[in-house]
Image (cartoon, rainbow, N blue to C red; front, side, top):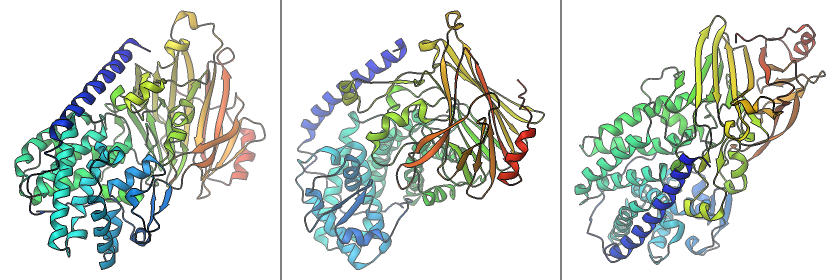
Length: 583
């Protein structure tokens, strides 16, 4: 472990221990006050909920079937809050109460009564129950859900339930304020601050908290959001998590005639272009650093708030990403160092990996991160081998915390070492756009630097690439390093290896054909897995080229789109010419 990373991990451990002590101390000091909240007699405003709804799920909830995080639990007339949860993700979804939006979408007297019954059941549970339901991020999600869906349960409720609802909600808000000393860095911390801003704006007798909540949110937004609009975790999914809460929060300030914090407005203005930067032609988001599947309806809703509607920017230097666009072809590449350890629990070892799409079809992807069964796939998903890039000695370019004790203390496995220096050079050349990048993630272990050169033609019909291992120190010059270059394909792509084993034919769902070539090296087609599918992990294929540095320090390859049939393209390969890069 590098000295700098060792210090950062030690700081994380000490900070975590100190926060736990403070949390226990503050918990003892507020135990009485949080059960006897200050009176709030009414709800002033209910914020919008932008997340995707499905009215058909209301009937499932009414029937006692709760489907969350890929698991199904049937209550059989018992309280769902008394049942043993099948997974932590399922429990977090249940106790976050986000499913209330589906009941509201059904908009019937039965669903309203069902929602009141379930909430009343939750309110009647002993407060001594802790665990996932009182984790800060889950509690923040529950507060926001109850506020935004309050019209569903309060419109025709009796006064007794109305008062019980508000007392319980106020108690949970006060408890949420006390958790600020013990909360994970990154998106969870922002979610808590957003929930507290909502609470101060939406409830009566909470106005005195508006200024302090706004200030704390502003400070955290300025810390976590980079100048180009990316999140400090370098995970595109963080934008999709935060924008559905930040956009209605901006509207809530306006509805209360309170001036929104400038940091909030500025954050939204920067995040929107960043979200467009990560989008492929089919509307999906590139799979980097923990990104999984995202509902297409939610993305469309978020982008409807984007006033610029411009072309995505080419470079996001603060977040560490590059984008090449030509014709209908788009390429997005990771050219950044790992995020700080405190927000790297889901970060991946995918430096210099890229994703390629043509129009509405994705071609080359990273494996991504699953929405369910994350613990089963977490180690693989974070590895370099799960990304479309070069892997040296079958080893990841980043190292992660391995000790089980440290993982428990840190609530995950932060990155302990990885690329410390990434060089990027971009220029427009006669025939297209040339991008050259390198990282030193393998320098310390194997004494080599990975350099990747890409050139996308002006018409988007051809992508040429070269991957090279350069000596980082003299002692590495004579080493016989083995390495592999992997190109994971989207499950919708049909692939077949060409007869000479030097290329592959790719057919996209719209029958568009692409040819992959590596004229000097053997090309293999191997099994892979696409983890970011909406229906769970899916089987797919990957193109793999293996080589040793003693035989070849670099490999040239290309993807070429064909305007003729796949059969004709295969025949024409006999008259091929070796691709040349302007290196």
